[in-house]
Every structure is written in structure tokens, then in C-alpha cells.
Amino acid sequence: MYRASEAELKQYEDLGFFIRENVFDEDELVRLRAAAENVHRQIVEAMGGPGAGPVDQVDNQKYQSVLGSRIKWEWNDDLRAVRSMEPTGHLDASLEVLLDDPRLYQPVQSINGCETLSVFSDKLNVKRPSGAPFPWHQEGLYWENGAEDLESLVSTLTYLDDGTKENGCLWVIPGSHKKGNLKGLEDRGVLGALYTDVDLIEGEAIPTELSAGSVLYFHRDLVHGSQTNRTTASRRVFVVAYQAGNLHRWNIDRKREVDMSPQPGSARPAPPAAKETVNDL
Image (tube, rainbow, N blue to C red; front, side, top):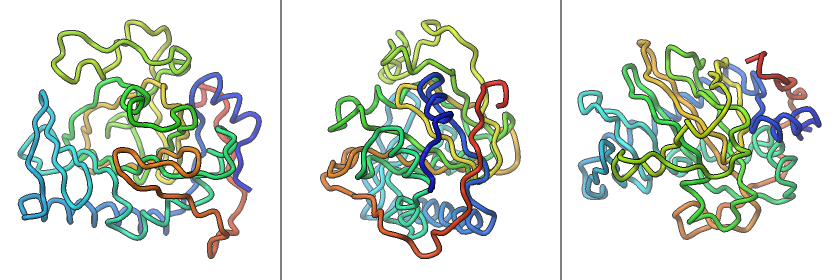
């Protein structure tokens, strides 16, 4: 019911992504936002407890393992906020169930041709007011040394809030995935090698300004980044990367197969058409 159309597959091949708007309705979004805040609260409360690991600082970024999730703290200590949490499904049932939602995984099946899928990664990205930008990068460069089948990986990004240029929505460089893994930045510390040198890419960056409930399906080598949240509200997204079935999760010695059995209440209207040109974004 939710498989990708020929137009969507063509856009994915040419541009490295396609978009479906308003995939999730407001009632679902209220539940998912509450789930995101629940996870964030659990992690902040546990950060100094006996189950939390030490804080590791690499360049200007701080990492910590808390409650079975690898977290990245916001650069500004005064915010007391987490930039990203990975994985998160085990900390809230609403997020765990979302991993098996056909609106997310069926388009991926069309892209990678896999009839069975497993979860590679699930992650919450939270950009609080004044939350910092994140440099241009490619997922594939992070994943190439840990993925068991890199070629089958496809990412999905679900906006839990409206995404705007003002609140730090994702920016992408269409067609950049065709370049493969690109050279990183020099003289930018330890992490510089993972940040894309955009001078190597032709093409204009565009913002993915989308309404809450919309989903971006994108290629692992699509160059993307985000800017500072200049508003007074949070911008939250849930990212799931799928891969071929029966493979291990990212940096976790276990597998999480996608449950493709019919889900209660899964009879939903057909998905809206994807945006078909960059000019529509």
C-alpha cells in the first residue's frame, strides 16, 4: 500500500531523496512528541547516575552512554539538553512500535529491493531553542566500517514538529549522493574527517521546510546538515535507518527485525504524492 512510486524512485536516484508530506496525523504526532520528551527526560535524569558512562569529549562535542543509548550533548552546557539519542526505541513503546510502521518501511523496500528488513539505527535528534548547527556530512562515511550491508541502507527522517529555516530544519545538497564518500575537512580536529568538504560538490543546498508528520527518505551519501534553532520552540525529528533483514544493529550486538505482520489500525488512506522536483521544496 505504501510502496514508492516510479516517480519517487526516479527522484531518489537523481536527487538522493524524496518526501512524503503529512504521513502522520496530529493525534499520532502528539503521542510521538510525548515519547520524545519522555526519552529525553529519562536520559537527563540518569546522566549522573550509576548506570551512566563517563562523558567523552571529542573536539567540541561531548558523548555519553546512558540507559543503553549513545547520546551527544548540546554544545552549550547551559542548555542541559541532548542533541541526539541513539537508539531510543527501547526507552519508549511508541517509538519502538514506529519502527514497524509500514508507512516508513515499505517505501524503503521499494528503494533497496529487500523483502525483509532489519533496523540499522533509530535516533532522536532534538534541537532546543538556541540549539547549535551541525556541519555538512554523509551518513555513509560514519557507517562504512560498521554496516554489514552498506548498500542496502536507507534512512527515513520524520518531522515531529514543523521544520523551518528558522528552527534548524535539515538542508540537503541534491544529487550529492552520486559522488560517493567525499573527502572530509582538514585542520578541523579529530571529527573534521567526518565533515564533508562541500567545495568538492557542485549544486545548491536547499532547506527541507516541511510540516510536522512529513517524512524524508534519503540516501546514505546525500550531503546534509542543519543550522541553529533561532526560535523559542524545539525542533524534533525521529530518524530510522533500515537495512536488509537478519543483520545486526549499528554498534549493537543484536538484531532487530522489522515486524511486517498486519498492525492493528494499519488500514490507512494511501500516502500523499511525493514532491517531484527540487523547485517544489
